[in-house]
Image (spheres, rainbow, N blue to C red):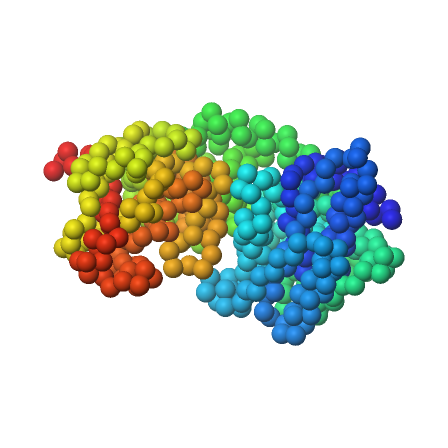
Length: 522
């Protein structure tokens, strides 16, 4: 099969298999069944040929979106049978996408994508050691690539959005990105691989389906040529330009960006004004993405307005952007932030960063996840300084309910849960499961959801045991409790009533973070 050989070469060229395990997203449709079969065939080939590198372990992950009734159950069973016949580990998750979309006030497409990638990460955690290098393989092909480029163009994206998807983005790989839909269908037919036709792919109420089923054929009809190849050729040129500009822009940002009085990073207006628009527009996008982790909702029109603002250079002026964000001028520099975050937080003085996600407590410097306070050294009823912070910790062994007093920097936790726990900053691989939730997610994704800025995360104080985050002061907690409602739920989960006897029985500690500067003022 030429597609099999081509895929092997593509994977080697881009290092797509340099991992210990692959979580393969499999819907049951043609694309994902082709991807799964090719990866399985390559793994079998590697077993027979000792000269080939050891092939990563394959785990097929299927998400039932609970949208299509029996048809969705059929898809799930189709993938299950394929995996059973080949002894491939099969993981399945059932998620009510409609309810999730309603809860988060996003489209079904967005909710489905978010749920799938969350499940892929949970699957890796369930089946693989934490130290494993794991990639997630998805079945995007070249028609998907062309559609994405065209959609980005009309969404008003900048030049970077016209580069399309990459063979590898972080831990996401796309081994079929080079292949056409025709190649995929021919492969499946030749190998007699069963797949499902999802009728929702023909439902033009979905945005991508309208582009795929209506706009792309219309372009082909008018131009008398398939638009896929011209779009892919353009993306290659745009990608080459992007590599050059990225290096130049990052060097300027690294040397010129600084933290302003609000705690946000800004760029001097003079720097932006003196650069060519091609560089200046990318500096704006980088400033935005550094603040919000992504610049997907920053349109070309937004960038143009921000450049005009920087050109005027009048401190105090601001313009509104999408989703409650704003660009403003202060201290002779351009800042981009959320409107609610514009009051000075004093992060460089008190160690507090104010955000919609809560009041994040910060260390004076990055500590690379080293322990700053070890809970096994607890000395009850004392106030102790937390290393490399402006903060102290007060630990009280709770004797009666009168000592249970709540505030945003207080956490109650039994001694048994504190064994091995420390205060530290984040580490790669940290995992957070909020108290009361049925599942968890990587800490980085939780912080993104809570709008915690990327540039403060490396200094953020948290309590953790190994990779399990137990408490993020001022934001959320995974163990114990932090308010009256969660306290009652916690005692009930332990089969106890919330009374003096139970408090003593579980050896409950009250842990409070104190701001040293606030104490000195009083």
